[in-house]
Length: 348
Ligand code: MAN
Image 1: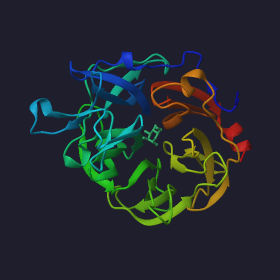
Image 2 (image 1 turned 135 degrees about the vertical axis):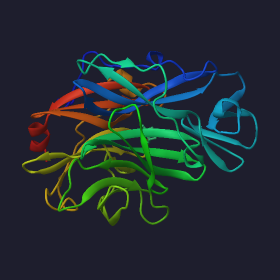
Image 3 (image 1 turned 90 degrees about the horizontal axis):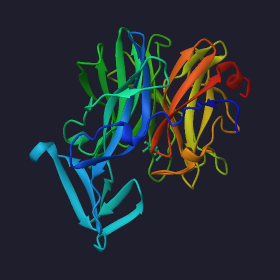
Image 4 (image 1 turned 135 degrees about the horizontal axis):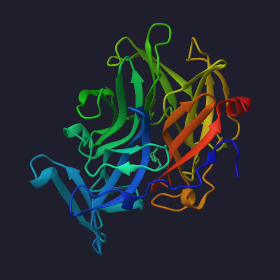
């Protein structure tokens, strides 16, 4: 087993049964991909809670946010033998030529005093809002910049997947800033500080045809308006990250440059973690990149679940040389692992 990131012996830290469904007619299918932060001496995770209606034999059904329906949710219900249904991935299906997710995700807070044992809030913290989030909100990164927590997340709807921005100071009241990167875009993470006088972000536009699922970086004067878009890293044919790559949480400032943990998947959708080292004053320059993953799905809970063979991180915390990553395993459960930043840098 890889030694760079040591898994918590308590893994999985959180399972779907640890979160109460948002409604009596829903089931929590997955708890996954948390953003991580500290607030008032506690460790906070902003979980992705993926729900679906109670399963029914012979039917596939998925919830969609719809303010005109009772309770704000409409259930799309399709017979499994309907010839217009195409179902090849547990996460997605298509019906009459349109794509849908099998689950509806919201974001929910969980709190801990030791970073290991978390108590999940009984209610959703943030639900998708408006027609650009009708299929839910997912995979939130949290960064504290200039006195506010900034939340970047995937906003999913029939119009595509884009990156949304929300901010808060107290985790009770939230300001929505709208979509900052339009579809198709996800895996948006903010740098913790300005670089050369500008805010900076990673994001992942997907090129159809020419191009691919690559990590880009952009700069902004105000966190809302983004420009100076540059492709930072691309997939590597024949390697563990040959199919798609995307940023994890914010990059870590080190004396050798910005250390960015990213996820990479191969053609079999096996998700591993790797690292990029970027120039500290010009983060559009890649100084080094992992040859081998720094973490692979090898534990049983990382190989078996809703969507197996996945380790996916979008949240970490720093304590001196130690990075604690929180991650989704098999898109089912939430886990933790800890490693030395110097040891990761030594591989680059
Ligand atoms: C995509 C996203 C993630 C998910 C992985 C693996 O990158 O939907 O939320 O964890 O796929 O399924």
